[in-house]
Image 1 (tube, rainbow, N blue to C red):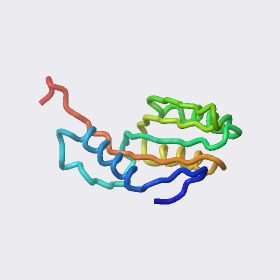
Image 2 (image 1 turned 90 degrees about the vertical axis):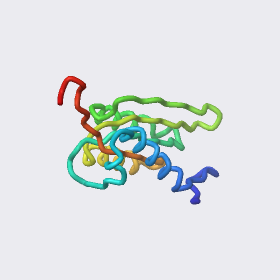
Image 3 (image 1 turned 120 degrees about the vertical axis):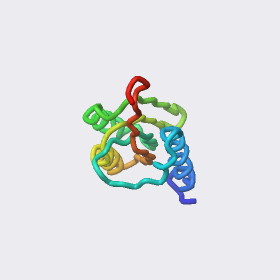
Image 4 (image 1 turned 30 degrees about the vertical axis):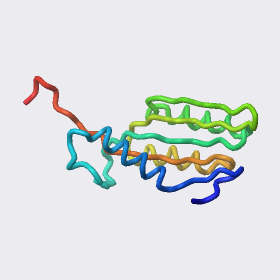
Length: 130
């Protein structure tokens, strides 16, 4: 475990567990895709967790999220009014480059912690296609 600030602890196995869960969710019918780590420009789906340790930087976070809106499929934000922190969860779909650029820009903001878990998008055949 490592300290993330303001007494928060991060266990790397939590994110690995989330990644495994997402892989199982998105690849349930096709186990041969488990563990695939290709860095090609194929689409990825996943989750990005953002911890905002200071409300002072929230405008910059929102600007970046707006700029990368095309890869964000869903968003939820939970503010903690007692200590002026917040947690934002994003569901994303995009290439490694797009999602990496988003998380990189967010991670460079002082007072922001970003973690992500991605899995490959699997194209499924429609029932009427064979």
